[in-house]
Length: 606
Ligand SMILES: [Zn+2]
Image (spheres, rainbow, N blue to C red):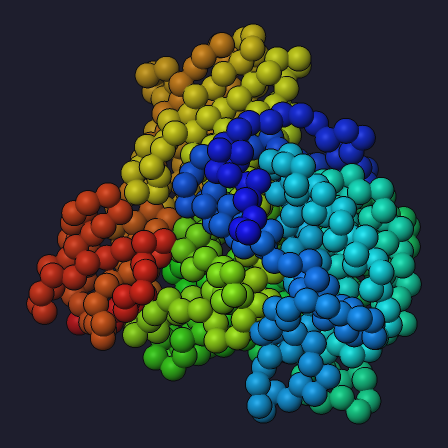
């Protein structure tokens, strides 16, 4: 019998402002230094309701697949590695535990049980959104079943003990925070006690061997990324031990030269090192370490400088040196452009931290690009474990599933789908920041008044966003709107009257007033077609953009066009464009609208 998902779209659309009983927001141990500005606060998952169909479909469909999985199957590799009876079907693919794994024969069994903790985290976040009791029960049950499997065998037999520990840690601290599972921290203690003797004593570099007698695959663990969740565990009350562990696993050989600007990211494994910049941000927030903030900022700048127009980065999962010809060459020599769910998840976390700390809207611009041009267009997770992995930026590009089932990206897809809402709005005292323009509602209480802002828009296809502000009684506060760097001549009107003052591209523009019971804001972010070169040395290799959207040419083998032809593309239907070229008319679509047809991302100008 098919499981009926509690996450109906209607449930998602249902608003809830109920505070989580007994769950305080994480205490800020930050800001005690005079002159330091506090980071912007995130809203809770339940404070934001998203009504955008593609965003909610992604969360709904992914969670529906995960809720259907047999719990015996989910636990099977963990039980097998603990030497326990393990009934039920294998999920297969990367998830399988195969003691005779041989990557020359097959990659099935590559990372047994690895996304288990990410799926628990996703159920917990989905519960924070929907309050569906089935999700709470699922988290409570899985944690208890998992607790019975905790054994050194899981770490000894695992290629990725630190990676897997990090994911289990994430699931347990989310179960504590969002579900209020009273067993989560005791289970975390046992997990940590069992894992630590089987982890390297400090973080080790990617590709460095630390376990004698193991092959190369055992050097791909990611101990240098685990500090972020260790610090979060500490902030959520798991104990001082987690702050100490967080500090211990910071990889100095990565952050120190990066903070000084004396190293770049060249040659580093892409997703895990961008993810590791989130550990640097948590070191800043938890330990007040300015050095780690500098490392994260510099790291982001290196990533931004080598990103595709889509916001994606790291062809063949490697970061490149500044000015490297590799990124342009990747358009012909690989189909593995950007590890999309994992990379976008790390990118969202990093830009969320940086935006909160610096209030610089360019981090919001970057997040928005990655959202519309990569992750929101990922193919859906299939019940058999087929998962979208790489965005393909080749001249002969296709959207395909990864050949191996249940890869890493099946763990991060539901996490980022849940996180759109905590990335859309932020607050600080009497300021509310609108970062992402997505049909949605945010609710909060401002000096005893119940306030909501509801966005109605077909952005980024259209340029106008309508925001209805409702207050239970008139209230004074400031709403800050992100004006993207590409948006020249942006305009804001309140109740039909233009707000005076400059709306500079690449800034937050504040509207402060006494808001009445019902007010309407209209924000216009005018969009024109523009071309962006892949890098400074390949000025004639360009992507066509409009606002935050890359427009992807829909013709197999198309490699060239004239600048004037591209910039004269016409909007032929909502979300569709067409250019007249020498070789006939060519259609252009956003990434979200590409199905199985061939496309390219860049063209060479002739
Ligand atoms: Zn992945």
